[in-house]
Image 1 (spheres, rainbow, N blue to C red):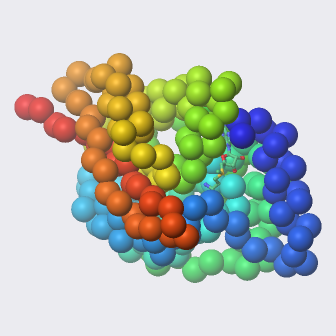
Image 2 (cartoon, helix red, strand yellow; image 1 turned 45 degrees about the vertical axis):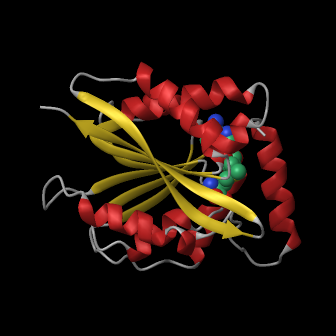
Length: 222
Ligand SMILES: C[S@@+](CC[C@H](N)C(=O)[O-])C[C@H]1O[C@@H](n2cnc3c(N)ncnc32)[C@H](O)[C@@H]1O
């Protein structure tokens, strides 16, 4: 599940099953986590004119990014990024044929093809306010060669996140494994004056599976 070709095939086959476009949601849709995301956007306001920079890593054909754009009262610039050009094209075509009205006139939404293990070649360090990851790290961690990619993606995400920024990982992985992994990785990413800690929230149980939100945020020290 760390191979671009696997995902290209997945989205090609998935889209051929239905005559009209339908978002495919890994784990769950926006409604399951809207309170977490929208509350976070309302809480963090670096300054009133600031447009919140959001990156959805491995967006696939999920409606998560479009729903944040639609519902956020805070101005947001959302980049939905995926390694699969098939998924990105499907999302671009869908938004062109069915435009969405943003809740804030200053908000922006775009879909880009990007290898998220290389986010540092697309963004400046310390430039993103929120990174969301629904199932992408999980997909990478599930294959042997993907483990290094997951670590690289996390490492690069930490560098492009602003000091005040947050990473949200939505996952079905048990805290015993994910919390340990994230906390160990965070030890390596300590920045001067910024130590990131991990908080877990249960998203809920769906079809017998318990889902978690791992929130990586800074602990600011004087
Ligand atoms: C499990 S799916 C999750 C898709 C979407 N986030 C959702 O919730 O439905 C994992 C996604 O990560 C993408 N992906 C895998 N490796 C990637 C990488 N290195 N950079 C960007 N996207 C990647 C895949 O193409 C796929 O769309």
